[in-house]
Length: 114
Image (cartoon, rainbow, N blue to C red):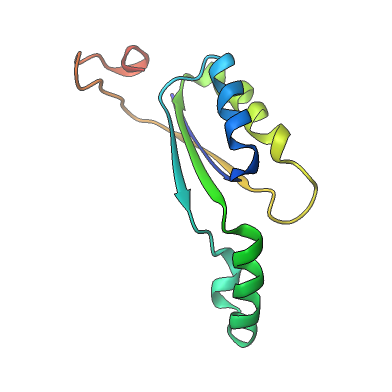
């Protein structure tokens, strides 16, 4: 199993969530975040750059999905396509291993917990 974390602009979020559902994703979590990135250590330009950064990137969402290994590439493609512009700030996608998953209600573990 893998966990996919994507930090993306909220502009296309509704479309992406619909596409993920069409592709079979379940248990998708969305959080609204403020991403500061590399600007956090740009001391001399911090105030000026922070204002520009805030205006451009304040609508960031984190999308999290836990899925079977076989679904990762499909879900990454769905997450990447609408956000790709070729410019800075398109977002990031991280794929992490999931050591164990347990469904609280049923007690099922592993892929059966999804």
